[in-house]
Image (tube, rainbow, N blue to C red; front, side, top):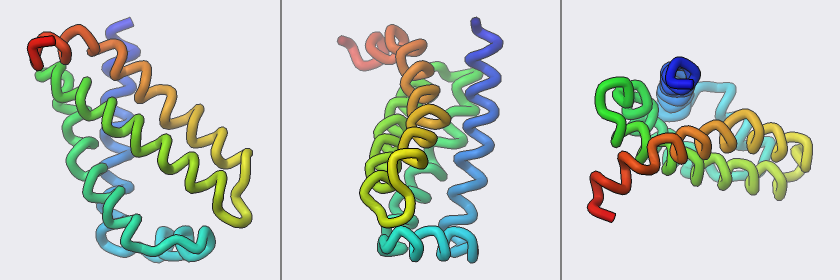
Length: 125
C-alpha cells in the first residue's frame, strides 16, 4: 500500500506543479479553457497559487508525511471546487465534473485519509 501512496504522491505532485506553472504563466491552453467556461482568469491564478504550493508538498510527503496529508486535503477541496465549476459551466456538464472527481478529488481524499493520523498528531488532535 505504501508504494501505491508514494506513486500517487509523486505523480500528482508533478502534475499539480506543472499545471500551476502553466496557469501562472498564462499558457494559451488555460486561457482558452477558462474562456470556454466563462470564468475569470483570476480563478486560474488562485488555483495555480494553491497548486504551486501543494504540488511540491505532495512530493515532500516522502520525507514529511504531514506535508502530504495537509497538501492532499487542500487539493481535495480545490478539486471539489473544480468539479463544481465544471458542472455549472456551459459546455462542460456532468461528465467533466465526474471525471475531475474520480481522477483528482478521490485520490486526494484517499491520500489525505492515509495520512490522517499523522496530521492529527501533528496538530495535537
